[in-house]
Image (cartoon, rainbow, N blue to C red; front, side, top):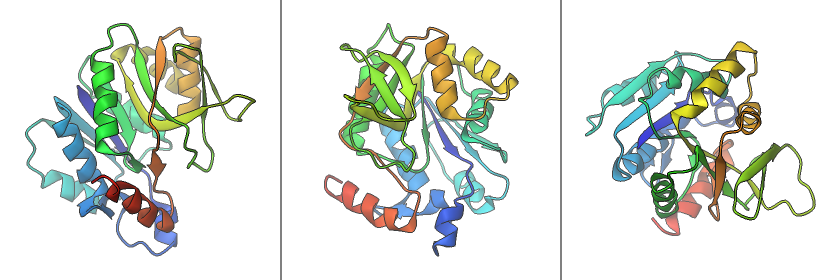
Length: 234
């Protein structure tokens, strides 16, 4: 399995709230967030890890360049206008085959993530397996509509009667998604949620995998919340 991390945001909300460190270097359970992800990926049979950081994050770039890893690290240094553009730049260095993409501030428990990756590695039919959660933590959640077999039928901005899941911000997929991604970039589509809708429209076979709780670190108060969440098991 190949892994990719989007860490190209400015982290402006954390900075405005008094957090001096760049978001990827904020510590959770004694580790910088980005290193925690890398270590989890290595333990989940990583073949390679690709990461994008923006050009202003010299501290983060230098930290990543100082690491000695047992797998190849593809580091992209590029300031982008959106997470979808960051994903497109990562797609240029990602090897062919299955991969898992996440943003640097998506926080999950390692055992939950390991089971999710195992499920996708064993799945020979789906083009993608989306981590979804019934726990709503995001300020603007993306709701995921599924059928009885957890096949994804739609991504929606608003809840409806019977809505169960929101996107957890963790996406396992194959390189079959890249033509759709390229077309979205060519058409000026700039939101990840619209790319996800395009995958469904293009007929890719996407399934959902439910994880009880996934949280984001967007604000200073979220750091303590994430730490407490992880300490319950780590």
